[in-house]
Image (tube, rainbow, N blue to C red; front, side):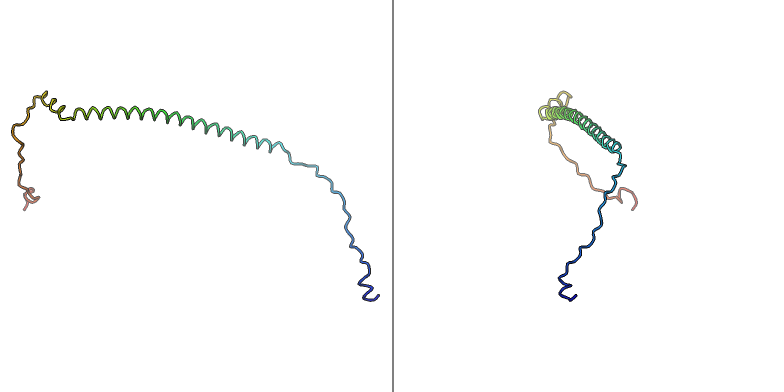
Length: 126
């Protein structure tokens, strides 16, 4: 056979392995443990949400009570500040002094100036 005949000669197809069916596996993973696990996770999640919601509601009630207490204390502080201001007014102080028997000073107050002493003089060591 010449080279040309060999080049154009029919080529035999490679032999393919024959296919055969594989037997199905008889054992499947049981679904019950997975279903139980999913249900447990959902149940724990729902219980957690319930506990969280309850805690948030309790905090909201406490916050409301604290705000009402704050309002009451703010009103009391305002009332007390008004009473102090009324009693600190000059005419109210003059009336209170007159009830205590105090009289206005006739002369202007005088201030005494004392000589300054040093620590050496005060301690006696020197």
